Amino acid sequence: MLHSRRSIRAGYRLMMSPPAVLSFLYAGLILVGAALLRLPLATVATISWDDALFTATSAVTVTGLVVVDTGADFTFFGQLIIMLLIQLGGLGIMSFAVLLLSMLGLSVGLPQRIFLREELNQTSIADLIHLVWLILRVMLACELVGAVLLASVFVPEFGWPSGLWSAIFHSVSAFNNAGFSLYTDSLSGWSTNVVINVTVPLLIIVGGVGFSVLSDLHRQRRWGKFSLHSKLMLSGTAVILFLSVVLFALLEWNNPATLGQLPEPVDRIIVAWFQAVTTRTAGFNTIDIGSIHDSTALMFISLMLIGGGSTSTAGGIKVTTFIVLILSTIAFFRRRTELRAFGRSLGLEEMLKVLALGMVSLLTVMLGTFVISISHDGDFLDMVFEVASAFGTVGLSRGATGELDSIGRLVIMVTMFIGRVGPLTLGFFLATRAFARVRYPTSKILIG
Image (cartoon, rainbow, N blue to C red):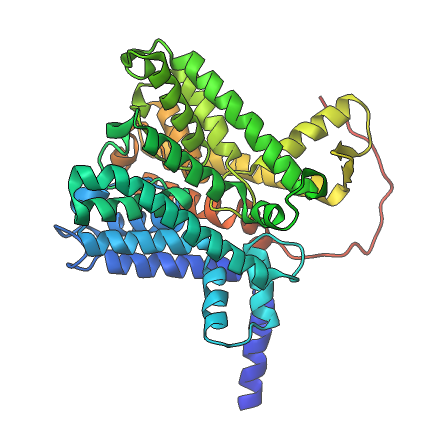
């Protein structure tokens, strides 16, 4: 009987794919976080289970969309729980588990390595432990330096206890691309502060570029020896950042509700830089997002859907996916049979994965917007913006979050969850591998 039970459990573990296991782990962490946030010790006044679950989901998925005021409605204990959920969500549950096992001197078995490979989006289980320790070192170093720099702004203004806690909280939130802030207007009170506008964006960029790229930078340190992924990610990030800063400045330069209210051109450039960086991956803002032009809102939606890098704390379809989609389009019009970049070519498997990711992402955003539009009678652009922000785990909002009903909140929570665990996880969770037993003759269809 005992042998039979063990066989059943072993068979069940084999049936559960790594993406499914990771999804359940993240869901479990969200439920635990919601229960902790419901404790009387965590809030100034009792909040509903709905509010607690939404906040925990937003924290674990490192999104930043809120339905209650983080700084006003949660006590220090509640804010600490939110910060820990952000840290675990950004670092990754399996990464944290592997670090814990390593620090306790316990061996990390093959099953744990397989789950870790899936979580970090790697193709091999080799050097995974080294990558996890690199992630931990980079995370601690960046968050420590960020907290020190931010403390130089917050401590003189709020005193040592409040100022130091604010610096630590915002440093963790920024590096993990979460966008949670202790202030109602996010960081708008320091829209032209040089320290804030340098520290927070740099934390976001380092956290969002991807730990695989950081590992490549640490090992190689020469452009010619970087992997193709690192070259695409670094060059793509630089181009997108430059274009987003320039476009945002041009679109909002004379808007009296955003950049137009700043008298000095240098201040407008500073704000444009900050907002362009945070829009792709984090939800901090130094202007009123609800006051931006519709054209700017559409640009923000595009940036949020693109997101940051693979194996990072950012969401979205990822920069490399976006680049491969562009390369595929160029290859089609040039009648090439393969994709080329930096002297390397990409195989059919990568192209199919990118197409699947793009389609699942598009359907997720469209379906989420459709359901919310049924239950919520509001501005359509605001609803699309909200869903895109949730999917990209960004956290920016045009004010629609607090107006959502129960169905709308559920849609946003599911969208945030899919955005964090990865859109393709949904497909891997539902699909099974099948080998073709019969081959059919090829044919052609009319396209376009």
